[in-house]
Image 1 (cartoon, rainbow, N blue to C red):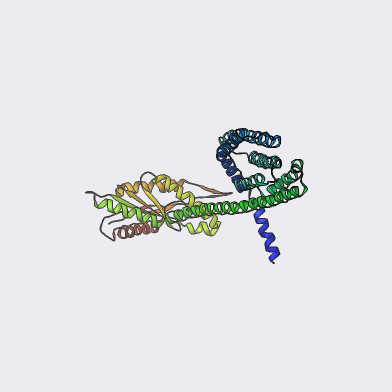
Image 2 (tube, rainbow, N blue to C red):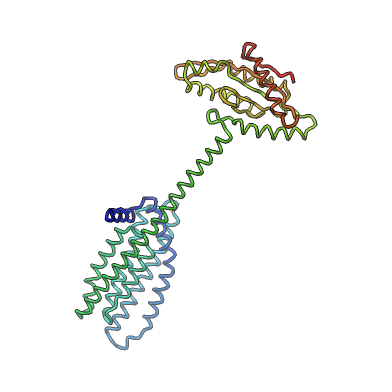
Length: 393
């Protein structure tokens, strides 16, 4: 089990989604752009130091000095060009992942090769591995490269390193020591690269998951807000939201000298037959179409809501009962004339209406007006349906 767990953990380290990989490449581009200024300064400092260094007439030391001057001069120019290229790539609105990967690889391999050359030159005067170790660690820390690719880079460079130092280090014992030190440096570089990739992949993966969860929560919150205010079937306001508008209207009416408002209650005639004969999906479709007719009629003059089932309610601010009756008649005629087509079915229906004034009478204002409108609706139902009745209050 422990072996299996280790294998699974290793797979998670080596694998990361395409989105995360692209983010790594963009991060590498940003790091290369900003670090290039510091690196150019470091190369310039080395260049000036070796330019004014006296070789004391020793041809080997002179060769070492010239080698360092040429190496640092070349890398300084190279990094200036790299900085410009990074700037041009950053200006693009959309990044090309392959281009970013190739660009990162160019910088990584160039600096690893630079480290090999510098160590090879150093063998002229000392069995040192410092330059290669610094470059290996520098590349491992600065650039986030996929582990497989990083391991390949380091192995290739070590092979070059292994044979390169043999050209300038002639003492067998020292050559062996330098090669072993190079192998140690490669091990450190691979370890740093894998740890860096692993840590960043975990951070970015967690960040990505958090973003996804936040988007899901945002969508869920929007749905909850919607369901808290709207009827999910018809898109009209639900009873709870409708009551908030009623309270606002009642408060507004208290401040007016001649408060005017009225309620309309609508009930679809014999709607149960539609559900029984054609099924609830057809009934739901008809309700949606009826709600659209109601909303279209009162959109600019009132607030409509679905109370439940086939019953709807409308609040008409600043409207008299006569004006409310006019609106109710308009909806009634539209419904009577409408034909709802569902697949091969053609369905017609009518509605009954109860109209009552909304009175500002205190805490029970709405209940009193609603009861009155409901009684008027009951009369309309018992009087043959498809009609508008007005409350006597």
